[in-house]
Structures are given as C-alpha cells and as structure tokens.
Image 1 (cartoon, rainbow, N blue to C red):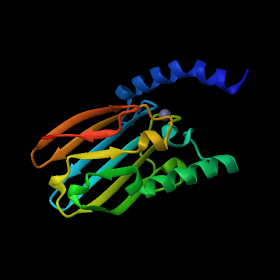
Image 2: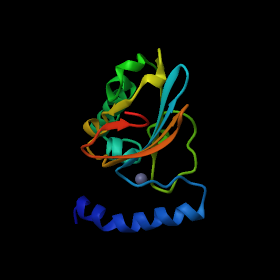
Image 3: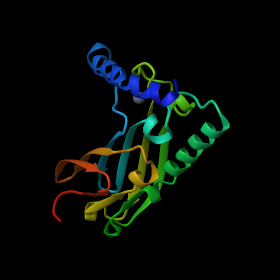
Image 4: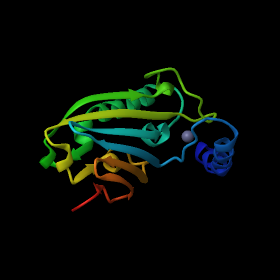
Length: 181
Ligand SMILES: [Zn+2]
C-alpha cells in the first residue's frame, strides 16, 4: 500500500476529526488548501496577518525528517520573509516592507505551540508594511497561489478606516480589492 493511497483513505476521517475538534476543544482546526488573511489598514501601516495550515505551505505538518523536507521548509520560510514580493500593494499607498514575524511551532519557529488539532500544524505570519498614505491603497496583489501550489482558497478580512470587508480569492484570481474602485 503506498503513501498516496493511505493519504486519500485517511482524508475524510481527518476532516471529520477536524470538525469534531471544532466543538470539542479550543484548538484551531483548519482546512488544508485554505488560508486566512487579515489585512488592517491604519494611519501609517498596512499589516497582513497570515494563518495557514502548514501543509499548504510545506506539504507536511510535523518536524522535517529528511534533508529534502528541511530544504523545502527553509525555502518556504524564505519566501514568506521576502513578503514584499508575495504581497504587492497598490503603489499609490507608498508602502515598504518593515517587519515579518513568523510562527510555526511544528518547524521550531516562534512561540510555544498553542493547542492544535492532533496531527496538525499551523503557520502564522505577521507582516507589516509602513506606508506614506495607506488609505490610498485600492488593491493588494497576493502572490500566495504562485508561491505555494497547494493553496486553493484565501479567505480575507480587511479592516479599513471606512469599514470592514470580507473577500475570498480562488485560484487563479490573485487581486484583492475593497471599497471604492
Ligand atoms: Zn492540518
């Protein structure tokens, strides 16, 4: 029996366990392939918080076991740290990347692990852009689909001084817009 078969057979069960966990414990069940973004547009900065299943970024949710897996993880983290390439903000806002904090306890990165659904792991990132005029931004081009082939959907909450917006990006659509166009 090969690993792919095992994976396919286990998927519905894992999904069911995730849904049970949503009610049973304060964990943080997630759906593989779905990433959450929170975008906050403030007076001086645009902050993007990324919350992804680790599987959707590196292809596994445990500590790397082989050199190839360690390399995959390092490359993925390097792509996230270069967040100015992953997120292209409308130049009207005059933004430059200021800070990237990544948290992936399964990879030994960041703070102590929160309670998670058993066998799962998350990656969270907090990305800060300092901007001349954040409210001038009308779009952000999100490069996550290009960078990480396992991501299928990105659910986004956007908080601006004018109000809050919810958006869903599905492959291949990568431009996030809100408010007046
Ligand atoms: Zn998972």
